Amino acid sequence: MNMDTCIARLVAYAQKYLALSPRDAVYARNRLLDVVGEANYAAPPYEGELPALPDPILEAFYACLEGAGKPFDRATLGDKLMDAVMVRPSEYEEIFSRYYAESPAAATNWAHDYAVHSNYVKKSAIDRNIRWHAANGLEITINLSKPEKNNKDLQKQLDAKSTNYPLCTICRENEGYERPGFSRRNLRTNSLRLAGEDWFWQYSPYAYFAEHGIAICCAHTPMKLDEKTAVRLFDFVEQFPHYFIGNNAPLPRVGGSILMHDHFQGGLERLPMQKAGVRVRLRSPRAGVSVGIVDWHNSAVRFEGKNRAAIEELAYSLVTAWRAYKNEDLDILPCTGDVPHNTASLIARKAEGGYILDMILRNNRTSERYPDGIFHAHREYHHIKSESIGLIEAMGLFVLPARLKRQLGEVRAYLTGERAYREEDLAEDMRIFAPMIARLLAAHGKVSAAQADAILKAEVEDTCRAILGNTAVFKRDGAGERAFTEFLASAGFPAEKED
Image 1 (cartoon, one colour):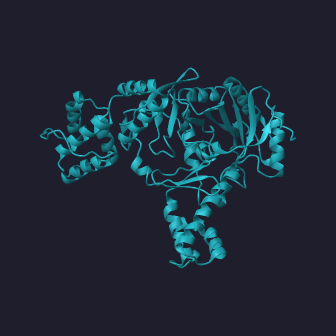
Image 2: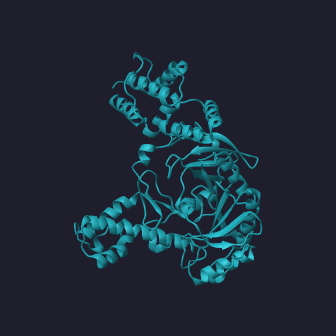
Image 3: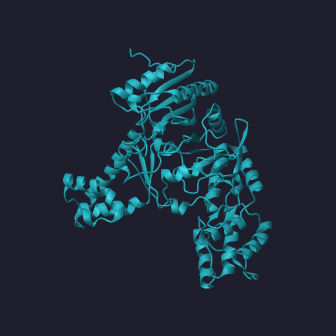
C-alpha cells in the first residue's frame, strides 16, 4: 500500500468513526500530507473495507515510511496522524452535549468509542492483558500494556516542584500537547462542574476496567481529602448515574500514581468491593441513612440513603475522627510530627435507593519491620506486587505487573519438571521467587501442565487476598474487630445490638 492510499484510508476511517465532516476531508488530507512530509497526492477516495480499530491503518503508514527510509517515532507519529483527522476539542464537546441530551449513557458510550477509535484508549494493547475472576471474589489482571511504578517513584513525584508546561501529565493543557517522548495529540476531554469547581473527564489510555476514566481538577492542585470530596463525587454521579467514581487516598504508598494533581477514577464497571454486602450494621446519627462495615478484606464503611447531604456530612465526620485516631497496639498513629498517616478513599455511586458512599480507611506508616509500609503489601508478597495498593486494588481489582507473565512461566517450568530447579541458577529477577518455588515443589512435587497452571493461579489469588489483609488497618481478628467497632462507636456509629 502506498502513502496516498494510506492517507485516503485514514480519511475514510475518520469520516466513519471520528465525526470528520465530508467538508473537512480535503483539509484533513492536507494535514496528513504535512505529518508524513509529502507534498503530492493522487489517490481517489477510499472505498474498501475499514477496520474497527486504527491499528492496521497506522501500521501501513509506518511500513511506507520505513520503506522510504524516513526516521520516525511510532507512538508520536501515530498520535499526530490521528489528531490530523479528529474533530477539535470544542466540536468534541458539542457532539458530547448532543448525545448527553439523549442520555448520560449515550454520551459516555459515544465518548468512549471515540477514544478507542482515535487510538487514545489503546484497546489492542489492553486486549492483550491477562485477566480472570478469582475463586475468592477478587479480579486479577496481569497488565501487559503499562509499566509498573514503585513507591520511591511516587514519592519523588510528590516532592518534585513542577516548573514546565504543562505542569504535570494530567493537566488539561496536555490536550493536543507533544514533547519528545510524550504525546497527547489525540486526547479529547469534556468539561465538568464538581462542587462549583471546573473539572474535566478523560478516558484512561490503559484502562483497567470497562470505560475506565479520570475526572481531573482544572487547577493544578495536589490530591486532597476534604469536606468537599464527597460533594464532588456525588456531583459526578448525579451527572453520570451509570458510573462509579472514587478518590485515591492522597498519600504515598496508599494512594495513586499521580499525587500532585487532584483527580478521581471511575467508570462503568462494578468492582468486587462494591458487590460485597454489609457484615456489621451500625446505628446512624441521621435518619434515612444506613451505615455498616462492609464485608470486605480491608477496613471499609458503607453509607447508603436518599439524602446525599446527610451522607456527605456523616462521611466527613468519620474522616475527621479517623484522622485523629490512635491505637499503638495496632500500629495506627495518625501522624509523625507534621506528616499525616491516616487517610481514606471514598467511592460514590447511585442506586435505586438513592446514594451509596463506601469509605476505605488507610494508613501509610512505615516501621523498621515494614520499611515499605505497615499497611502496604508486605515484603513476602513483593514477588507478586510491590507497587502502591491504590483505589482500584483496594476495591478488589488487582493490576499486576507485566513481568509476571514471564516469571510465572519460569516457575511453571520448574513445577512440570521441564526445567530442573537449582536456586543458585536463578536469574537475578527470579531470586525473589525462590521461597515460593521451594514451597510449591515441596507441597506438590512434579505436576502436569494443567495442574501447574491451577496451582499458580491459586497462588496469585491467595497472595492478592493476603495483600488486601495487609492493607487493613483493623485486621479481621479479635483485636482488630473490637478496635474497629470501638473506633466507630467513638465516632458516633455504634454497632446495632443483635436481636
